[in-house]
Length: 112
View 1 (cartoon, rainbow, N blue to C red):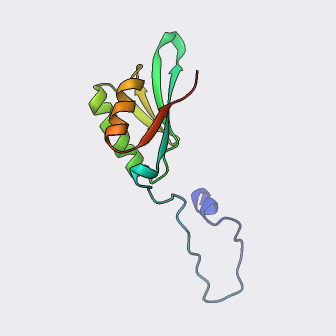
View 2: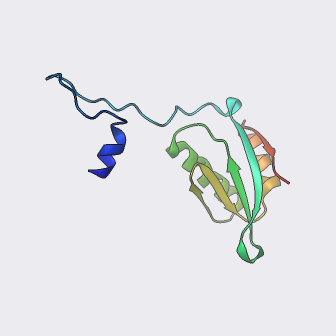
View 3: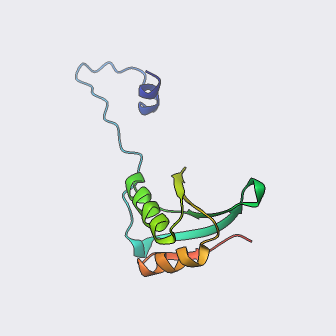
């Protein structure tokens, strides 16, 4: 019941006998690579471990996960996709930048 409550977005009751709630999708359509502007960050985790983070992807979760899987395979390391960001273990900014550019994405290194 809790998840159903979140999908209704403020609709509590309707007096119309033929009313049916239609939920609009929350995810935007995936933009083509040429229209994407991805940012590549380097984060430090506890213990001095490095993490490459790719953000600002506009599109469906499935497409983001597919891109994350491809980047992990090309870099030969582990990682994950969480909260709209692709996380790659280690410092792979240069390699990720080259791969994204080859795929047609606009991307740049960001952060300090």
